Length: 366
Image (cartoon, rainbow, N blue to C red; front, side):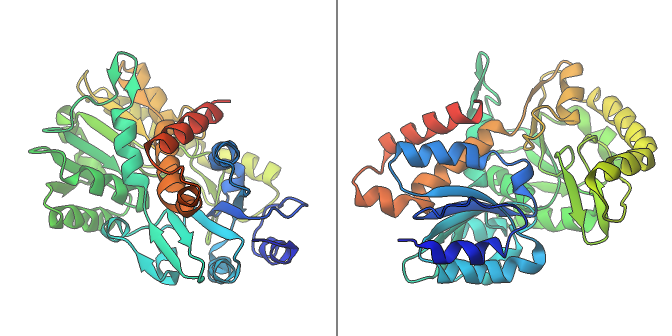
């Protein structure tokens, strides 16, 4: 299935270091810097071993300018089973695919790509399935969110993860409403229109209007990058969002590329005032939420974001993106990337799903 010929071309397309030995087959996670934070390799590797699939799972730091070449490498490499996709490529990869299923089309983003034996590439999105599983997951005495019907849900963000949340929830609120807040209000409006087209109720809200709406909100979902660990390497320069809460505007400094140890000193000094303002407003806003509200943060690195800390300090139930990350990975593994190999061995189905879920959940927290 493999051979040594494909590893060197792949190494030329990524910014992180790859293993010295070539595995017989490969799957992975592509994004701008997943090697610095992603849990996917940690949970996919033991799942592949448990299901006796001879393949490695690698984080692949693929810059925007190398995305086209990477997709061409996928097509030309029989050893590639498929990849998961994270920020910032979830929408951009769609132009390179031969097929996109209805779920991904409705979301407008892909987080899983399967390579078929003829080299064609098919995209899907398992984030919606993962989010619903996370909201149903038991946290203490019961599910994190016992009932979606009738809820007013505040979604923070309007990118691929936010679209997945909106599509997942659009038909399940049953009289409830989605409120969407994003740094760029036009993108929040576009997402609200997408939800309305799916038959849901949705309103784009500007940050200045939040206080009036928060007392009615039963569930807050952070689907933005606010709180995400690591340096964000934008076209305009480098910045960081980890010290910020998603419940308030963030306008971090953007500095020229430099040594990472120097970056943190320079960036922290320039962003200190903005971080204080963000925290003050976040703490004030979280007190406007009703006592029964739940705050869910899709971010899982760091384990506790500023958003979650402020929610817990106010006595609210809160959870990070751990179970969503696990559930969407299980779906991608069993139903997409490894499906044909599992079916060929007659082990696909509910039993395989339960086994993969157990292995991934145990490995995530190891």
